[in-house]
Image 1 (cartoon, rainbow, N blue to C red):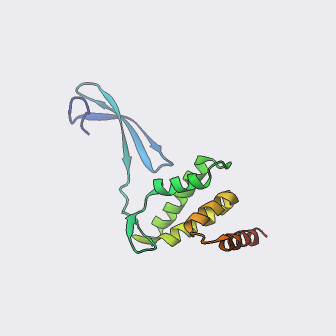
Image 2: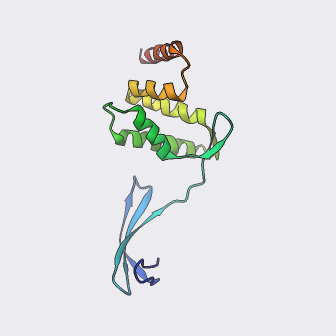
Image 3: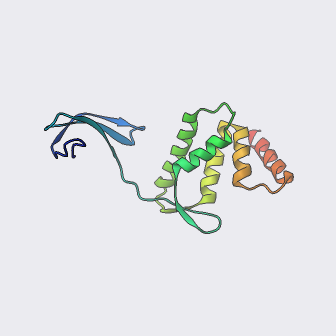
Amino acid sequence: MKCPTCQNNSTRVLDSRPVDDSRSIRRRRECEACGFRFTTFEKVEEIPLIVVKKEGTREEFNREKLLRGLIKACEKRPVALKELEDLVFEVEKELRSDGVSEVKSEAVGEMVMDRLSKIDEVAYVRFASVYRQFKDINVFIDELKELLKREQ
């Protein structure tokens, strides 16, 4: 690892610890030439997970985009950011454990809605209304009836 100050190739690791729920390692390093201390992070390189959209286009799975959508659905609701981050982590973990390189956006949406309904029902309905693109009030009412059936 090159020193960011003097570009020397000789650095030593002072401390290593797992971070991000043990998904990466934080290393504290020191340059043996100039003594400069800096931090590096080591993470497993993941195979890209491609999401196939409804119209057939493909894009790489983006956990930040999913988290932003969930945050928007939970606006002014008593849902902790940590809960949403955990939800996104669980969804991504399940998708990657299936061993497929492509997944339909419908599958991702259903996984998210299933978990979100257990966290906050209002946020679930908000997310579902955008995801399922409710065309009129009747579709909205049907979704609410379905949610009430699941609770009983």
